[in-house]
Each structure stands twice: as C-alpha cells, then as structure tokens.
Amino acid sequence: MPLRLATWNINSVRLRIGLVAKLVDEHAPDVLCLQETKCADDHFPLNDIRKLGYAHVAIHGQKGYHGVATFSRFPFVTTAKERWADKDDARHLATTFAAGPLEGVTLHNFYVPAGGDEPDPTINPKFAHKLQFVRELHQWSERIAETDARIMVGDLNIAPDPSDVWSHKQLLRVVSHTPVETEGLDAMRLAGRWVDAVRAHVPHPEKLYSWWSYRAADWEASDRGRRLDHVWASEDVAARSTGVEILKAARGWDRPSDHVPVIVTFG
Image (spheres, rainbow, N blue to C red):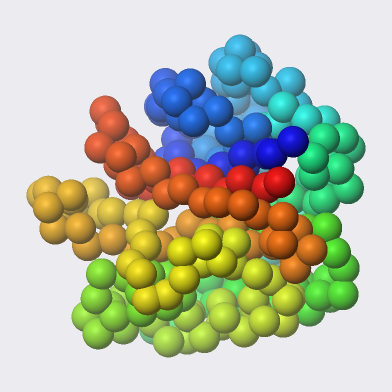
C-alpha cells in the first residue's frame, strides 16, 4: 500500500487551516507534517484536523512563533520533543509509526531557524543560533547514522545546491545559501547517511524550489525561488520512495504561505 507524506511550512495554521483542507482534498496525503504553526498547543485547531481524516495528531507549539505538527491516518507514538541550540523553541517533533506501511519508522519533523538577514554570526545572533542548530543536527545525525527506519522532513531553511536556488552566484552572501550553511547541511546529511528523497527522483541540475519570497511583486513571473523544504530518509526507507511532487501551484492560492507542500510517496 503506497503512503503519501507531505511536509509544509504553513506560516500560521489557524490563519491557513482552509489551505490545509484544500491540500488534503486535492492531494490526500496520508501523513502531513507542518512547520511554523505559530500556535500554542491549547489553541491548536484539532477538531478541524480530525475532520480532515487524521485520527492521529502530535503537536509541539508555542504562542505566535515556530511550532511543528504531525498528522497521520496511521497510528503512531510521540517519542521526542527535543530542545535544540540552548532554546526552548518548538522546532522538533519525533513520532514512530505503530502500524501501516511505515510501521516502525521514526519520523522527525524539523523547523530550522531562518537565521535573520546578515550572514555574520559575530554581529547577528540569529545567524549564530542557526549555525549552532545545524552543528547539533550534525552531531545528532552521527549518533543515529547506524540506525535504519527513519525519515527527516521539514523546513530546514537552507537551499544546499546551486540548482536549489534561482541564482547561485547572487545568493552566496544571502542567508539560506551561504557556504557555511550549505557545507554544514551537506556534512550533516553525509554524517547521518541520509538520502535526499526529493533529489533521488529529480536529480541535479534540474532547478527545484519550494519557497518564493513575499517581497516579490510577481513571484511567478520572477520565479526567484529556493528549495528550503526537504524530505530525507535512511537508505532502507529511501529505497521505498516511488515519487515526489512539489506543489508550486499552492504558492498562488488565496493568502498563501511563502512555502509550498513537498510530497514524497513511499511504496
């Protein structure tokens, strides 16, 4: 039985719950991971989510900032809401499937810090925090490198390859594509023996984006995107992936997020 797993930085789940419903109606993901939910747990629209057919819900939120959530048609157990980079921000949620096509697989849902505008950690605390977060992800990946049955999804806020941005040359000094970030993310991927499940189906150098800035007067015409949203898996799980979709059309929905959903199908 195939399983469709979607990841999406929703940029406020309460503001865009209608878009979540639209995604589910049109694309029917079996598992949906959201980031930047911006919602405390006691205000999360759980009834709306359950009406969409997700009986199994895990949330890790905070008021007005950050936040991750995982919904599934298959049962899972919540295994971790870890603390990262010396802050109590809601940026990670781990769940392990108890049944279904991914039974025994642990799914990690991450929202990595954006890092602010200035790519200098000595003058920009937000960028320093992001780099610390990536270093800790590297250490964590090393610890679990020998384990199977794992998936990592989310807004990692780094476009790692030249073909993941509209202009490699022009973005080398722009946060999300600086060498210290891209090299750090690539080192982390190698340390954890992660497979980029999206690029496994759409290899470089084909351009792929999942984010377009709100600042663009016409995002579609300029098409100055970046691939910030990722689905990675251990080799055994990645070998079961059968296809990928990046829903660019969602950027044009009414009052959209600046990110679009990324869907990977596992057989």
